[in-house]
Image 1 (cartoon, rainbow, N blue to C red):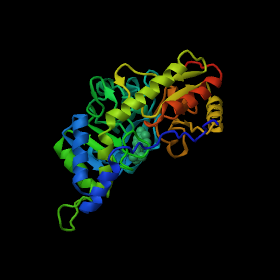
Image 2 (cartoon, helix red, strand yellow):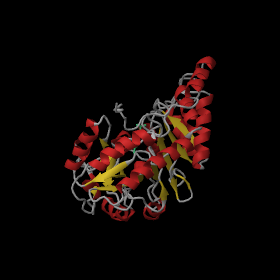
Image 3 (tube, helix red, strand yellow):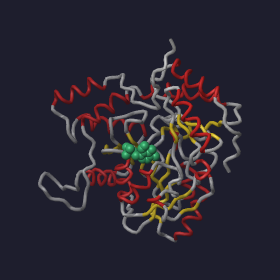
Image 4 (cartoon, rainbow, N blue to C red):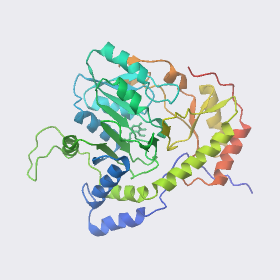
Length: 375
Ligand SMILES: Cc1ncc(COP(=O)(O)O)c(C=O)c1O
């Protein structure tokens, strides 16, 4: 009998002490938006990223929103956002009262193209107040190149899916003015839901914390500005702590899965691996491949689904989508060319070799059209 059990794309790997730490929260009566697990989780992420401060939040989107506010972004401002990202990076800009200026990604790393920033800043004539760089698919943007072109503007690393990835010799999150993480259920490290902002400036960290708890000035009901209820709960932090204990193990498993897929794709004319830029060792968050066309991607996804395997299309050009169409942009064609052509394959850290061989078997039997260069 053949085993045809469903293989999901990417699911939480909860084989550590998650249940024990949650039970401890209940026993200690620390279940809400303060508690020892929140403080411990913040400390661990600060240490991992080599930052002086980490502020836990309710999710990755809220983290970007807070980082933008702490960077001084407000009404009427513009913020550089890569054209190839999850909508949250752009939505957070609108939440801060500003508007995105979409800049394309480079073909060599699929991250924000530093060479376009100078032109964007010249076009906008002082309206751009910050730059968001997204660490695409768990691979770092080239932070040095971005800093060299940023003309002193605050750089925010949107590292939502990049925990475990490195930039040169260090973990991502160390180079921007701020860096933000997501601990959503589909991330390598989940907290059920949650986010984190890291930075070195203590005044900025105080402001992040203040804004995240309704800008309350003390125990009394006195507030000094418009704030948000963005604090992470102790329950979520407890799950995050258990997950962090297994970070290296989970990233190693994902890298091994990625290496096996890479071998199968090497030499194919109809499929390509994502570009691996020399400045980053990716965390292999969501293993994804490039097909020749949106039709090929759709066909591959259907073929996988017929074998009870979940594969899914990845990001599309953000500036082409209805809510963002009117925002200014400077594109080089890369994100438009990728739209509809990137497919993510099963890559949960607990995916067994047997399960991966089932996916590989489908890949090996499937044939698409020949890929042309993306630039
Ligand atoms: C690049 C990017 N930024 C931000 C987010 C938002 O994170 P959250 O879902 O925790 O709000 C995500 C989530 O997947 C993301 O991929």
